[in-house]
Amino acid sequence: MRLVIQRVSEASVTIGGELFSSIGTGLMVLVGIAEGDTPADVEWLAAKTASMRIFPDENGVMNRSVLDVGGDVLAVSQFTLMASTKKGNRPSYIHAAGHELAVPMYELYCQKLSRLLDREVKTGIFGADMKVSLVNDGPVTIVIDSRLKE
Image (cartoon, rainbow, N blue to C red):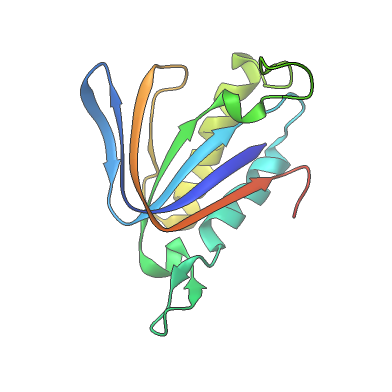
């Protein structure tokens, strides 16, 4: 399972020309699910997302989490995060999980993170053609892979 986490001052998802979800200060999280990912991957990544200290404290040092600052989270499924670019110029998505695994794992991640934050995690619609907008604050962008755990 792979996440791209961006600290944002605002983010939104538009589907079919209509605003579907939006947040203010918080995290925009792109979520990629791979074949073989498990609920243990979800647990680890949800805990990391909630507690990652990437918001500034009173001294401007990144020392606070989204939980500490009361920020929101917008999580959007993105199978292209699992792209393999090893051969040629056309990415392969052979490692991306199919709907039967990816949908429940994405939903479980959002549920676990919602419980940790004690607030609803905003989402897109799995598999929809979405327009994602955000203002990256910092910029701060972190990539986390549950298999690498680094």
